[in-house]
Image (tube, rainbow, N blue to C red; front, top):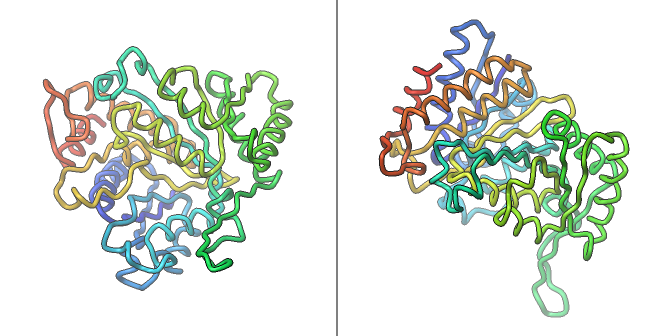
Length: 353
């Protein structure tokens, strides 16, 4: 089980360190885990001048899975666009053909009060958002900034092929089959031809999954419904840009984005696993970061890439035990619980394992 570890920037090194401790514990228990580290993002820019060095890409391609911390920080914001840390993240997703982004939004009972919504609205929340990751306006051509008739104009192209839509739809239906057999496809077909095609293709794929109840929703309504009645959703599938926005919105229903893992998979279930949150440079190096999303990303890795369901459940059970014991990092702390730092909550997870 060869894992490429990319610590990244900001709190990335701190949170991946705790995840690596969990992997080491599982290795000691007999899982044949090998890890090798490389640079990505701002740290790679500082070392080599580019956010995704060829050596990193080679190591990621040779590995069975990739564990990523986070990338970015204000010190790199002034760089040319192709040197910014985020280009490394987009680049590795594209190069590894990681087209299916899985972002669960699960509210643990112990954290019901951490959500900004009323507990009765979010209690028991368990949504899986499937986001297409390699197409859409983020990668569409043409794109750029240029002069037109004496005006500076910026432009991007939203584009999807039938094949791209069909493959992400199939992933979503397969996931729905393993859950509650309900799938909501999100688009903006009333004004965007690109997403009219999306709706048409998803509807066609649905014919092969008669046991899954398919619904369609416009993205603006979906954003409202996630706040109004989030438990109406089970699995949601949408394009790259809409998915970027909706998955962040859904993450905050759970009280903290610091609790939410993610997986980005290729057609053969090779994946890159990372927390849903960013690099949080304001708390980097202070031992305050919440590593639980990264640890839970390891559980997703074991489940989806390595088919080690028992090990995945062990990790998730350990995290639930830590929360039940009342330990909290600052982002999920509430009165009556015990506030601890990054390493201490990592210690607790290891003890629970």
